[in-house]
Amino acid sequence: MSRKKVTEEQKKASEAQDAVENKEEKKEEQVKEEAKVAAETEDQCKEAKEDAEDEKTLLKRQLEDLNDKHLRLIAEYDNFRKRTLREKMELSKNAGESILLNVLPVIDDFDRARGHLGEASDLNAVKEGIDLIYNKFQEFLKQQGVSEIETEEQEFDSEVHEAVTKIPAPSEEMKGKIIDCIQKGYKLNDKVIRYPKVVVGE
Image 1 (cartoon, rainbow, N blue to C red):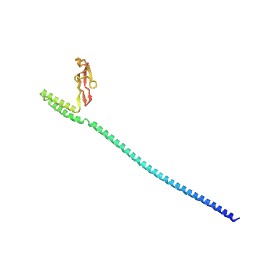
Image 2: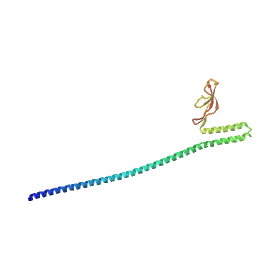
Image 3: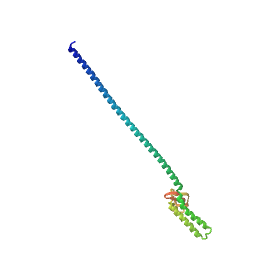
Image 4: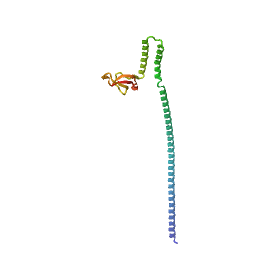
């Protein structure tokens, strides 16, 4: 075998070995690159997982806060409802107290008048005393917003009056008007609390 041929074969073998080494180096670089990408992806996954855990913890805390606020609100409303109910009951129980307190002096006057009836000799004085008590009571009713409903020679109004019976009118102009009042009626401010019972002319 000639020297030239041996050199060429050595050259080819050397080139083949270089190619194999280059291939292996490239493969190593590729493996390193893939490992680097995998490591970065793992880091990103880890960060994303940590972020998700943080978000989950934050949402859990917010949910607990909302539940706590909701429970407090329900408790406050329940307390408010009970307190309001109790106040209403107390108000309805004691609503008439001030009115009754103002009626008591009138009853005291009646008691004094009754005590003097047996020894009273002057009938006019007794009548005056009763009138004074009556006027005092009327004044008290006015202060409470109670007023008498006018009936004398008034036009009959079914919204305000209650007709007990009808009788022939004594004159033409009294037709449809109130002839007599059997029982007085009263208003509390603008509301009728008792309708007057009247006789109407026809």
